[in-house]
Length: 84
Image 1 (cartoon, rainbow, N blue to C red):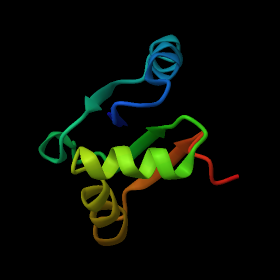
Image 2: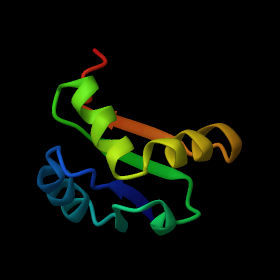
Image 3: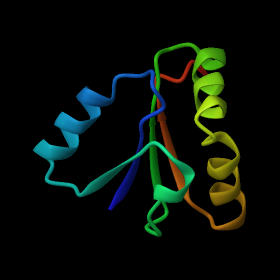
Image 4: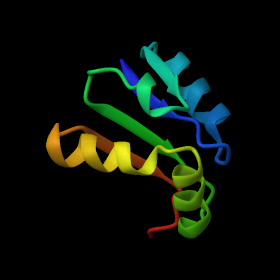
């Protein structure tokens, strides 16, 4: 199970299509309480780091993602989040 972040911006539809084609299980997460314990997170972005981080903070996801990554060793895959 992959935690797929829905932050309000980003191309989540393309990621969903790929995950469906690969037959991976995922859960769309838009609130901190929705994370699964599978330790995998995909962050679909929009190419603007500032806009992406602002959207995570607005949805109370930013601190939870940091916590899960640092304390519980969740793996993160950021796609087009502007950190190139």
